[in-house]
Length: 316
Image (cartoon, rainbow, N blue to C red; front, side):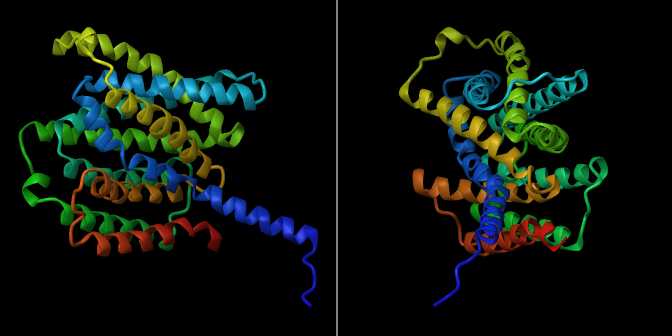
């Protein structure tokens, strides 16, 4: 008969498991983002890009505020912290605006390929701003995940689509800005997450982003000639906005920040590589697309890279 495990030791084991699961929260966020490109394209058929981005954060902020009011204690924020939330809100608004504009001007293949640069920007900022350690294991993991994701994307799409010209050039530039500003949102959110919580940091930054993006909507309408009255709230559009707001924003931003309660921003960034792979699976199941012959190979290489990067801190 095996001896009973002491309750204190069992509590330590359970705490370790919970910590590990929460550290994997960004992987769930990346999975939710995997369907964003397809859903965004559906929304663009009815709503201009910046208007759709505004609707996304408005729905997401409303959901997050309900949760944080019900669960978080009352706070008195310092001027410094209020400024911090404002910086995060502006950064994430800029990221969403350029992401949606870039998405509207590029192909799915180009968008997936540019996405690879987001973790690279995050690692560079994490090392320079937060003083995070760039270990050999983390560097190897990020490198392998990059190679694996490129293999997946290049195997899924034609070379001509990846190297498209014309308006795609401006779109790729927008997506590069989106990647860099998301890295800012990730890295500069770390101190506020440590002082408060992932939920509060995600909520208040999202709330700041609402008026920032809202101010861009009239400008978009004036410059493009779009009309809000022409937008028809079809079931497909409603589902797209709810997915973008509730899952792609409220849930995913919280999960992304939740991981940073346990690991460095540089480590969290590695999970971003899962987004194009999940997107390919989403396209295969929902749209009948073929993932491509390199999908399994690239996905396996990417998985090894994510494992190496995500287990960096467990080595000390």
